[in-house]
Figure 1 (cartoon, one colour):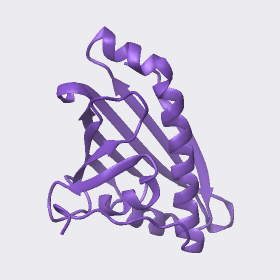
Figure 2 (figure 1 turned 90 degrees about the horizontal axis):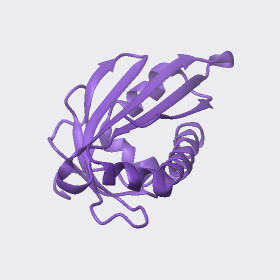
Figure 3 (figure 1 turned 180 degrees about the horizontal axis):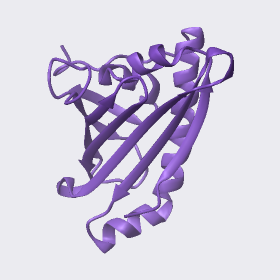
Length: 165
């Protein structure tokens, strides 16, 4: 396992509202479409445990860019865990976690953790070759976009759909 990427941001909205937005995986392209493209839901119900999506990572030097994520744990209003796979033959396990805690003034502190478990030495080499820094930068921007969407309704991308419908 590679050291996790850990980021946090404070959003000036109630925790329940932030949770409801994040618990619907169809909303995630709205704030991640600058690096995760072509989102497709894996089922019609995009909310809660079991909701999932497939997407393409727009990273430099990534030949096998498709990945997926499904919500494995959804603990209202505090925590959402997404697990998935990506890379060549989907052999790289991924783990994403959003933890929401109350912040002063009625806001919400969102902590985001992203981890990968490369299967082969070549996968670990690609991770070390700048991919982690790239993911950190893109995820930081995603959290800033999330704040803009929830606080000001600005910077929205397109919601995910089932097979583009």
